[in-house]
Image 1 (cartoon, rainbow, N blue to C red):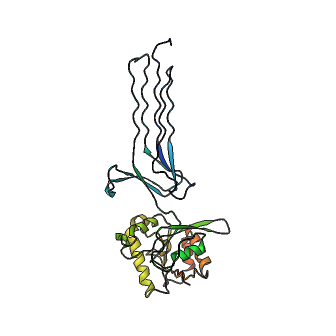
Image 2 (image 1 turned 90 degrees about the vertical axis):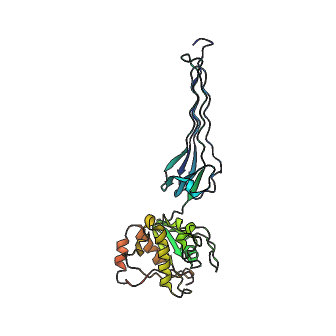
Image 3 (image 1 turned 180 degrees about the horizontal axis):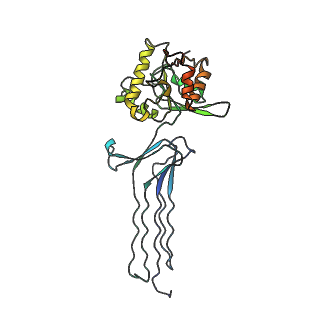
Length: 305
């Protein structure tokens, strides 16, 4: 190509912004409020195209729901769910990079164009607690005490209702190397499925649990069985479609078993954990048959002993 001839290459495209589920994080505390990918570089002489901008990947824990929030609106009706990143490795494109500009070449020496701007979106990231086992109970029923007794979690414990205002997740390690995770969420009150108490803020954290344990305080309750029925009704009213009463050991067609434990003194804890492990391994029927002789009891866990 002789000197003076047009030979400008095309500009590089802008980078994308993606959200990806990774095992490296367990919360959203590290996510910046503003994220931007790199711009594409300008075209070069001798018809060399510019480099594309590097994409930016927002790494989040699994269990994150990604929604687009329409700019200028905070109404829930203006949110569109883009992805539910339930598995590690899943990702979603949330903002596409702009196209690079067109360079001027000998074929069109007087024609060139600027690149296009990339997409700009406002997104909402919601982390739903991901755990094998969820603890369901009235306020101050002993859920946090139970979680602290079986795992290394350190939930706030106090003798008054609504001490727990955010979910805690504890990890239980078995001697053979297997593990299970257990989540303690804020206490449930009647009408929670309508948003009363901490309502939806509590119930949404149960959607991904595989087993539910209903925690009832038999020491303080005047009618523990009615407390259990109230808890079960609230959970089913809100989560029936997504969880289908997620507790395999407490389904409407299965017998209900007593599990009286003392988190304070450790009584009944080892047996409870072994039974949970059987259920999570898929040996639910084996567990049912083992306890088939007792069909009139129901599951209880009291934090006071």
